[in-house]
Image (cartoon, rainbow over all chains, first blue to last red; front, side):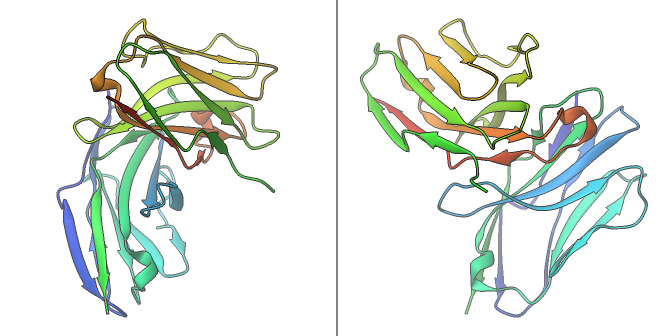
Length: 114
Length: 116
Protein backbone atom coordinates (compact mmCIF):
# COMPACT_ATOMS: atom_id res chain seq x y z
CA UNK A 1 0.00 0.00 0.00
CA UNK A 2 1.11 3.54 -0.66
CA UNK A 3 0.31 6.54 1.48
CA UNK A 4 0.76 10.19 0.66
CA UNK A 5 0.91 12.93 3.27
CA UNK A 6 0.45 16.62 2.65
CA UNK A 7 1.06 18.31 5.97
CA UNK A 8 -0.11 21.78 5.02
CA UNK A 9 -3.92 21.93 4.71
CA UNK A 10 -3.84 25.62 3.77
CA UNK A 11 -1.23 28.07 2.57
CA UNK A 12 -1.22 31.65 1.44
CA UNK A 13 1.27 33.56 -0.70
CA UNK A 14 1.41 37.00 -2.20
CA UNK A 15 1.41 37.50 -5.90
CA UNK A 16 4.90 37.26 -7.46
CA UNK A 17 6.31 35.48 -4.42
CA UNK A 18 7.55 31.90 -4.22
CA UNK A 19 5.81 29.15 -2.28
CA UNK A 20 6.67 25.52 -1.57
CA UNK A 21 4.10 22.82 -0.95
CA UNK A 22 5.22 19.74 0.95
CA UNK A 23 4.50 16.11 0.17
CA UNK A 24 5.88 12.91 1.66
CA UNK A 25 4.96 9.41 0.66
CA UNK A 26 5.48 5.86 1.71
CA UNK A 27 5.93 3.02 -0.74
CA UNK A 28 7.71 -0.31 -0.79
CA UNK A 29 8.07 -0.14 -4.55
CA UNK A 30 11.30 0.77 -6.23
CA UNK A 31 9.80 2.10 -9.44
CA UNK A 32 7.00 4.59 -9.24
CA UNK A 33 5.77 7.90 -10.57
CA UNK A 34 4.87 11.07 -8.73
CA UNK A 35 2.46 13.79 -9.75
CA UNK A 36 1.20 17.14 -8.65
CA UNK A 37 -2.31 18.01 -9.73
CA UNK A 38 -4.08 21.34 -9.38
CA UNK A 39 -7.82 21.56 -8.79
CA UNK A 40 -9.29 25.05 -9.12
CA UNK A 41 -12.89 25.81 -8.06
CA UNK A 42 -14.04 24.55 -11.45
CA UNK A 43 -13.24 21.03 -10.12
CA UNK A 44 -11.13 20.10 -13.14
CA UNK A 45 -7.99 18.27 -12.01
CA UNK A 46 -5.10 19.58 -14.05
CA UNK A 47 -1.66 18.00 -14.21
CA UNK A 48 1.01 20.38 -12.97
CA UNK A 49 4.10 18.23 -13.07
CA UNK A 50 5.22 14.60 -13.31
CA UNK A 51 8.35 12.94 -11.93
CA UNK A 52 9.71 9.48 -12.64
CA UNK A 53 11.30 8.04 -9.51
CA UNK A 54 14.21 6.50 -11.35
CA UNK A 55 15.23 9.89 -12.70
CA UNK A 56 17.34 11.88 -10.29
CA UNK A 57 16.88 15.15 -12.12
CA UNK A 58 14.07 17.24 -10.69
CA UNK A 59 11.22 17.92 -13.08
CA UNK A 60 10.41 21.50 -14.03
CA UNK A 61 7.52 23.02 -15.94
CA UNK A 62 7.77 26.76 -16.43
CA UNK A 63 7.18 28.36 -13.00
CA UNK A 64 6.68 24.97 -11.35
CA UNK A 65 9.49 22.75 -10.14
CA UNK A 66 9.88 19.90 -7.72
CA UNK A 67 12.43 18.94 -5.13
CA UNK A 68 12.48 15.16 -5.26
CA UNK A 69 14.37 13.45 -2.45
CA UNK A 70 13.98 9.72 -3.07
CA UNK A 71 15.74 8.51 0.07
CA UNK A 72 13.60 10.80 2.22
CA UNK A 73 10.50 10.00 0.17
CA UNK A 74 9.79 13.66 -0.24
CA UNK A 75 8.33 15.40 -3.29
CA UNK A 76 7.75 19.11 -2.73
CA UNK A 77 6.38 21.54 -5.29
CA UNK A 78 7.81 25.02 -5.72
CA UNK A 79 5.76 27.68 -7.43
CA UNK A 80 7.76 30.72 -8.48
CA UNK A 81 6.32 34.13 -9.37
CA UNK A 82 2.92 33.12 -7.99
CA UNK A 83 -0.08 34.33 -9.94
CA UNK A 84 -3.69 34.83 -8.90
CA UNK A 85 -4.65 31.97 -11.21
CA UNK A 86 -2.55 29.61 -9.13
CA UNK A 87 -5.20 29.74 -6.40
CA UNK A 88 -6.44 26.15 -6.14
CA UNK A 89 -6.23 22.88 -4.26
CA UNK A 90 -2.98 21.05 -4.97
CA UNK A 91 -2.81 17.29 -4.71
CA UNK A 92 0.28 15.15 -4.58
CA UNK A 93 -0.15 11.62 -5.95
CA UNK A 94 1.91 8.49 -6.47
CA UNK A 95 1.44 5.41 -8.63
CA UNK A 96 3.76 2.42 -8.76
CA UNK A 97 4.53 0.35 -11.81
CA UNK A 98 2.85 -2.62 -10.15
CA UNK A 99 -0.43 -0.71 -9.99
CA UNK A 100 -2.28 1.97 -11.87
CA UNK A 101 -4.54 3.83 -9.47
CA UNK A 102 -3.27 7.15 -8.24
CA UNK A 103 -2.90 7.41 -4.48
CA UNK A 104 -3.60 10.98 -3.49
CA UNK A 105 -2.76 13.10 -0.49
CA UNK A 106 -5.47 15.12 1.23
CA UNK A 107 -4.47 18.26 -0.62
CA UNK A 108 -3.19 21.74 0.17
CA UNK A 109 -5.42 24.73 -0.42
CA UNK A 110 -3.29 27.54 -1.85
CA UNK A 111 -4.51 31.12 -1.88
CA UNK A 112 -2.60 33.71 -3.89
CA UNK A 113 -3.33 37.23 -2.73
CA UNK A 114 -2.78 40.51 -4.57
CA UNK B 1 -8.40 17.67 -29.08
CA UNK B 2 -11.30 17.30 -26.71
CA UNK B 3 -10.61 16.36 -23.11
CA UNK B 4 -12.46 13.96 -20.86
CA UNK B 5 -16.11 14.88 -20.58
CA UNK B 6 -18.58 13.88 -17.90
CA UNK B 7 -22.32 14.23 -17.58
CA UNK B 8 -24.30 15.41 -15.82
CA UNK B 9 -22.27 18.14 -14.18
CA UNK B 10 -24.50 18.05 -11.14
CA UNK B 11 -27.06 15.50 -10.01
CA UNK B 12 -29.47 15.78 -7.11
CA UNK B 13 -31.39 12.67 -6.22
CA UNK B 14 -33.47 11.27 -3.43
CA UNK B 15 -32.26 8.55 -1.14
CA UNK B 16 -33.06 5.14 -2.56
CA UNK B 17 -33.06 6.18 -6.21
CA UNK B 18 -30.64 4.86 -8.83
CA UNK B 19 -28.29 7.20 -10.70
CA UNK B 20 -26.10 6.86 -13.78
CA UNK B 21 -22.99 8.94 -14.34
CA UNK B 22 -21.37 9.08 -17.74
CA UNK B 23 -17.76 9.51 -18.80
CA UNK B 24 -16.43 10.05 -22.31
CA UNK B 25 -12.62 9.61 -22.34
CA UNK B 26 -10.09 11.19 -24.62
CA UNK B 27 -10.22 9.53 -28.02
CA UNK B 28 -7.60 6.80 -28.34
CA UNK B 29 -7.06 6.39 -24.61
CA UNK B 30 -7.31 2.74 -23.65
CA UNK B 31 -7.33 3.15 -19.87
CA UNK B 32 -10.22 4.66 -17.92
CA UNK B 33 -10.53 5.27 -14.20
CA UNK B 34 -13.25 6.36 -11.81
CA UNK B 35 -12.45 8.13 -8.55
CA UNK B 36 -14.63 9.56 -5.82
CA UNK B 37 -13.82 12.79 -4.03
CA UNK B 38 -15.53 13.43 -0.72
CA UNK B 39 -14.80 15.74 2.18
CA UNK B 40 -14.19 12.97 4.66
CA UNK B 41 -12.30 10.49 2.51
CA UNK B 42 -10.41 12.64 0.02
CA UNK B 43 -9.82 11.09 -3.39
CA UNK B 44 -10.51 7.36 -3.62
CA UNK B 45 -10.01 5.00 -6.52
CA UNK B 46 -13.16 3.13 -7.54
CA UNK B 47 -12.62 1.15 -10.74
CA UNK B 48 -10.20 0.76 -13.65
CA UNK B 49 -10.78 -0.35 -17.23
CA UNK B 50 -7.95 -1.27 -19.59
CA UNK B 51 -8.85 -2.08 -23.17
CA UNK B 52 -10.94 -5.23 -23.38
CA UNK B 53 -9.58 -6.71 -20.15
CA UNK B 54 -11.80 -7.42 -17.16
CA UNK B 55 -12.05 -4.27 -15.04
CA UNK B 56 -10.47 -3.93 -11.63
CA UNK B 57 -13.40 -3.28 -9.33
CA UNK B 58 -11.41 -3.49 -6.12
CA UNK B 59 -12.16 0.09 -5.11
CA UNK B 60 -15.94 -0.08 -5.36
CA UNK B 61 -17.28 0.56 -1.84
CA UNK B 62 -20.32 -1.73 -2.06
CA UNK B 63 -22.31 -3.90 -4.43
CA UNK B 64 -24.62 -0.96 -5.05
CA UNK B 65 -21.89 0.44 -7.27
CA UNK B 66 -21.21 -0.92 -10.74
CA UNK B 67 -19.62 0.35 -13.91
CA UNK B 68 -19.34 -0.66 -17.50
CA UNK B 69 -17.42 0.51 -20.50
CA UNK B 70 -18.98 -0.04 -23.88
CA UNK B 71 -16.89 -0.49 -27.00
CA UNK B 72 -13.75 0.47 -25.14
CA UNK B 73 -14.86 4.08 -24.98
CA UNK B 74 -17.74 5.58 -22.99
CA UNK B 75 -18.17 4.43 -19.41
CA UNK B 76 -21.17 4.55 -17.11
CA UNK B 77 -20.99 4.39 -13.33
CA UNK B 78 -24.25 3.27 -11.76
CA UNK B 79 -25.16 3.66 -8.13
CA UNK B 80 -28.25 1.77 -7.03
CA UNK B 81 -30.39 2.66 -4.03
CA UNK B 82 -28.38 5.77 -3.32
CA UNK B 83 -27.51 6.66 0.26
CA UNK B 84 -26.58 10.03 1.71
CA UNK B 85 -22.98 8.88 2.17
CA UNK B 86 -22.77 8.50 -1.61
CA UNK B 87 -22.83 12.30 -1.92
CA UNK B 88 -19.50 13.27 -3.46
CA UNK B 89 -17.83 14.40 -6.66
CA UNK B 90 -17.25 11.51 -9.03
CA UNK B 91 -14.22 12.03 -11.24
CA UNK B 92 -13.36 10.13 -14.37
CA UNK B 93 -9.88 10.01 -15.89
CA UNK B 94 -8.29 8.41 -18.91
CA UNK B 95 -4.74 7.66 -19.96
CA UNK B 96 -3.15 6.57 -23.19
CA UNK B 97 -2.07 3.21 -21.88
CA UNK B 98 -1.84 1.55 -18.52
CA UNK B 99 -1.04 3.51 -15.41
CA UNK B 100 1.60 0.91 -14.73
CA UNK B 101 3.97 2.85 -16.93
CA UNK B 102 3.12 6.09 -15.21
CA UNK B 103 1.02 7.43 -18.04
CA UNK B 104 -0.53 10.72 -17.10
CA UNK B 105 -4.16 10.47 -16.17
CA UNK B 106 -6.31 13.26 -17.60
CA UNK B 107 -9.37 14.11 -15.59
CA UNK B 108 -12.84 15.23 -16.49
CA UNK B 109 -14.67 18.02 -14.66
CA UNK B 110 -16.52 15.56 -12.46
CA UNK B 111 -20.14 14.99 -11.51
CA UNK B 112 -21.28 16.38 -8.18
CA UNK B 113 -23.81 13.97 -6.73
CA UNK B 114 -26.05 15.10 -3.90
CA UNK B 115 -28.31 12.55 -2.24
CA UNK B 116 -31.10 14.11 -0.21
